[in-house]
Image (cartoon, rainbow, N blue to C red):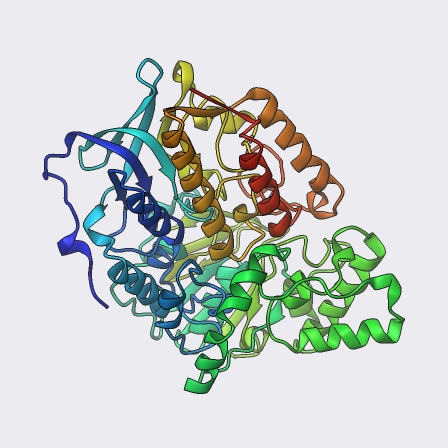
Length: 549
């Protein structure tokens, strides 16, 4: 893979007092496209990226087994047919290395590296009310004066790493999945513990089980899962999906979750036999379709949620031979309903637990209390001796990327303090009190969780670009949400969320995994198509939820 580091601007290139029109934080899916669009407008713009190369999530998440759970042919940029068709995926759900290579291809094709500064983390962003501009500081001592601060830090980019007391005493190695080293990690013959069985933990577990000496899985919350079918693509397969470019471009921005499929059936209009036939057919698809395009009623009605949950649960139980494993790994409808948590895709995951070298340990009611030099200690005093600990312990989703830097708005108010009190945004695109800070993948938009990320991030960056273009054409320099506009959006968001079963479940979707985090559904649940239409209406109406000057 081509490296961009050598061609990128570096600290020391007269960065002190640099004046720009826009700073883009991050060089992942959103940041790369945002940089491209603003540069096409003729703006002086630069992206700052903590990693040594492009990719964002796909740069950092290089743990064993990391791969798409969106189909590759929809996880692409759709603004250029040439860009789309000149890249070919090798399989339906490509792995991390291939995804990172794709983003490098985009960077090279669009000649973006010259405007990206790598190995540089944004540490603070302060708004100057008198001048209507932001002062951005970085980990490398850069001080940038910019009109617009555009955050493309990702919705799952702030890992929960320091979770347990005593981590610094461990004699072995500790890795967090989202900060996996580039250098090979030797797990051969070692005693490895994996903490967490969410989507990431599952990918790691099913990948390393046959490579380690002994694997101990520490499982807290059982997960409903779906099997992944991941065929390799032939040249004919690649040509076939490329021929669908126009159809994909016109369809996926308007579906519920930004995928190529959408809700097709109504529960009440189907007989019990027909319902089961549909569920079996969709389950066999080997994708997220059962979650995002079967019966929308699973999100609203307890009895329908329970029926579909039981269907998925039974599929999982059929693959586990041990009732104790079922108890540890398979949820019941009394725990929560299928789809109200993030639904992972897996490949032969349950079969892993039948290996002699794999052990599942429930920490639901016997939690991990501390890390000792020799391993992990549970509340009942049991100690598991380990050589390596892999932490699939999740993220401060949606809010973490910005809360971990010092963002100050009007009157010196702190975004971290604001979001520690109440998580509020205007359409997930701006926050009242922080003028000219435009945001992607933050709460109260579909991109915070419930979306094929490229679909939503393209839409958000395009809205941001058009908004900046509007300001420049009208001779305006500042845009900010009104308090009334933000309150109206939050009320609308909450009304939709509270009509569903999702807020009744504790999950990272609700911020429940982060102690003290305000409880609110992070993702807009009205659907990707609906959200897109509301953003369009806002712009065409002259931005009534915002003030400009």
